[in-house]
Length: 360
Ligand code: ATP
Image (cartoon, rainbow, N blue to C red):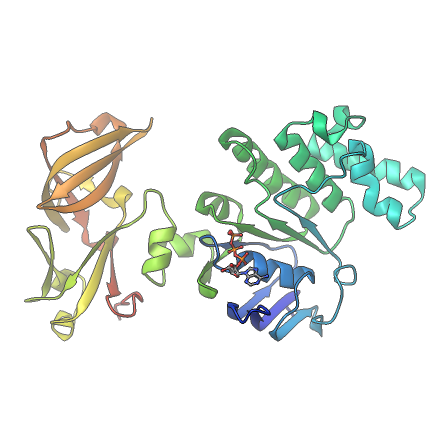
């Protein structure tokens, strides 16, 4: 039996706004699940319904198979870490971490033991006497996480916990959160709009848009088997290139290049006259002319050297694309560039429904 079950969960706010539609998900004990999507897609709302901080308008939420819709946050045995940290400014790091246990009236010796252990996991041992204002953003975030993990609850809920940190701190904290998960084995639901965080932390990712779940899968599945144009464009950096057009004479035009769909579709004729989306990832292209590929002649407009690779912005008769190449192969700007898109690296989507077209 799944540990947490969300069955056709809906949220309609009092003003009538339908923020979450028929959210279905089963979470196993110990899983690390990430909700990801652009701002306003309903990920925080869903997390808050799981936490018991927001009513569920319709649908059922079960913990260990038992309906929990009516249970308060404490009864649900969840601990939440907020984006804003929500530390008590007048309490030391020690007291902030200990707070939940103090409230529960846990024995002081036990509290001390657990605070010391938690502080050790989080690298906060030397900061226990400090007040929150004398900590860096990353340290404050660790205290907020410490306050959650010390309670040994069944589920950790994290709402954009790294969004107030700078890029370097985020990478460090990301690693630490993964470590904490490995050490505690606690079921974790983590909300972010950052696809890199989602890909690196998650066992499974739920991609949301406009209140609807778009796809649920492992990072690998989302990258290699996106269900629709939205997921294909959301996962991956730089995003997948899309060529949109009507199928004419079995092909779509990418600038002045004819992309013959018979290489990808057995029934290309069935798509004649219909809109289609042809997708390929920047990192999937090969430079030069390769067999088993669409060969494209382009002009280089701009290059961005990023270290081990370079983003190359190309123009194909007024159509644009981004290619990601090894930085040793960085081409000259304003020069012609031929590249190849291997047939097996191409994704096709229905131009109307935007759903992937799967080949039988
Ligand atoms: P963000 O990353 O910006 O926090 P999100 O995906 O977490 O976005 P939610 O906070 O879940 O999004 O909000 C989902 C939608 O519900 C948004 O359009 C938001 O404006 C709306 N919403 C949130 N709270 C309320 C409320 N109390 N009343 C009405 N609408 C709300």
